Length: 473
Image (tube, rainbow, N blue to C red; front, side, top):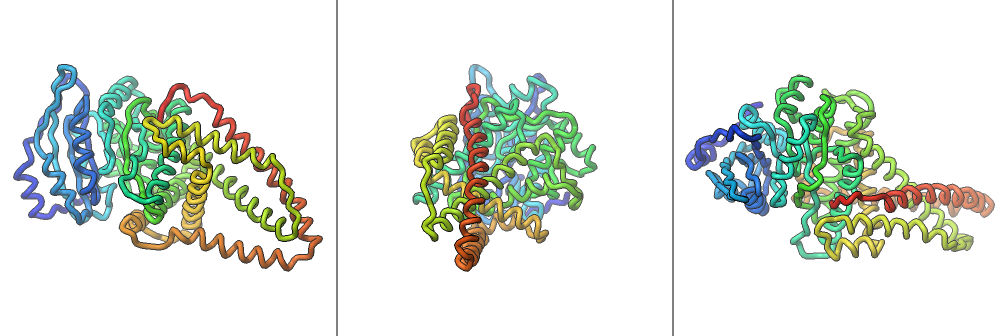
């Protein structure tokens, strides 16, 4: 990979960067790499958290790419040697700051650049995003867990979305929704023998040996490749294919930055969903084959199937209810209160499992409407991702997410517009049918919906009542 570094930045970096230190030989060595894209608001807090760890990484490389803000100038204040004493043990680390300028491979390029700096000197690669603040014991716990079993190729921290500092109801609502979403995903992985579907780039420790083996086995020039929209998911699959385990930590935690507006959330979630579909769907695309039966993708399949049923039951209920009311044929049955009640119980169970839960997390679950509204938003992301996949449009979803985070684009409104158009069309078609046909449709539709909803409710109840085995997310 060719990396261009602007001369004025490289010279500035060399003027303050300390000499490279060899890691101590009596223990495993950990190199931390932080890919950073326009992170001037968060990079200082990220570095401060890493430098206060009970076990410091042996070296920290901040790799800034494609940024047009002051991330470099904020980060360089931390460059140089640091030491920290914990329980009479003094740890030393050094911080290096690199600005690789315009990089077409974006985060993938930054990760590979960082890997090239450390691959011949350190045992473990600790990846931390430029907006992820790790808990004080995170590195210590990750090291203990990955050293405990040589079969483990990587371990992800338990991550949750940090409370938004932005004012406004939308930002608070979306933060609560993302916290619930991450909590449910992490709990599902913890209860599956702590087998992690994806070693998230937010905060994961990876064996350098495993990364090198991935390169050899897949004939890659670097561990991360741009073949997938979700580079961390693809790498996790490749590590698993080599016989390594991919795990989620039982204790290490990290707070990640969330999306505080609908446009940015759509950009992120559509990219994630599209990338997962690309890995799940059979067939060869570019240099990466779909792997529908891969064990790391079982949870992805379950999530997608669950989302299909969520869409079908909700849309069908609204259509049948509207149709029944239009001919004065609706009769309320209390049994229809059971599914939303079970949903509240499940959401509340997830909320109470969040480490450091807030009153807003509990209210989000108890009030039912916020969780339901957030689910509708996620259903829009789901439909958009599958639509993009089947349309085979060649779009840069990384760039689309970046534009969305900058406040550009209106694609996030498309699911609502399509739903409205379909609703109007079905309404007009319904009104043209004779009463006998309308009655026949209702007489078949309601029983089918009832059975489907009860099956779905049974699965929700099972998840709500299962033991969490003491895990906190």
